[in-house]
Length: 516
Image (cartoon, rainbow, N blue to C red; front, side, top):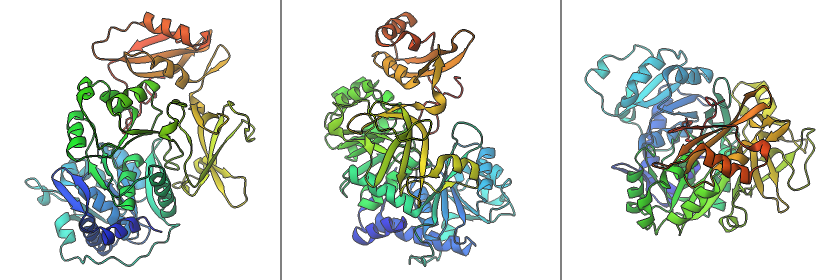
């Protein structure tokens, strides 16, 4: 099974059903399939060959969706690049995988013009959108640049000849990791089909589902909303971001949205919108969360605001898309758990000697085995070997996540920390997540991040960064008193710093790089 098969089957079965709603653009499965076919023929005509990498640099728009499907249909490998990425980083990514074509938009031309001059492998550039004065008069001589409409003109709507098999690469998703340059996670059609099938199975998706997607399509969580909806025949409402939360809330009601994927940053914003307590979201069937675990206070707040929605706490990483989910019926019993391994996947914990941990409550590194596990990092054999290692069977490699968990007697997982985030204070190991969970118990704490800082006596001292609720009068003394009641003495923060906001990644996850 190839990923584009999801779109093609839905186009055959539901040709007139809305697949993508993006602002004023409302496209059916039939329209997306036909346009993607035309663009695929255009790419082939530009010299894009089987296995070539094609970058898509644009916002959450219908053109971005069409471009991704077109690359797959042309037998290529797509990489979706966040349009906020700076030119030199964009050029690094494109040079790293020797990108053959770039599909973008006139609104990104300033960034694109600077980037393409740094990428010698480019054979062509396709630009959607209306051109401003003089744009087409100031194009570089190489590579050739094609306006979107011109590229599609005269191209057939028939499906291109299939040149791909399921073990071929479908996507490169670049992830920054903790240090160094971005790494390209290699995902095959089989990897992505497996992940999509598992997720839509436990979410119980049906073709009546309407999913709002405020997450960038360059982020696998945002990207998979489009892929999964094509699989089950549902509709995706694309929004460029969560910058204007009231606009998103209006869309939830107007489009009768049934699925709302979020990250903790979004929940923090939602729970400060007091007027939502007066609203009703009768169509919203489920909310999902990944990127980082939701604090229990956020879970309780979301249940108050969206009482009819089932909340799925999940855990995943780009290298395998998704690992686990907590059935909503378990939320009251295990609010801090991220659940069990998803369908068609196995997970287990290992200790520092690589022995499988069988006792509940013991911390260990999480290992994942399944068809969703990546093929490795693009041309980084050493990095790949650290993450993908020999599994329990001779025929497989399994994914060592680098994340510490423990497991209860029923097999439910509880996140502890990244292995390299553990704080060693007074000779004791401290999980930042455990301290952060206690901080989030305070009603006036919107966001919290805990790090270790050098200390001559303690080795590392614990420092907490706090974003208080708007208008709250929260003091360091209140926080210390709360922590003293809830934590062992070696886990109590020595330093507390209040901030108006905490730096986040493009996916909305709090980043601690600048805090350490």
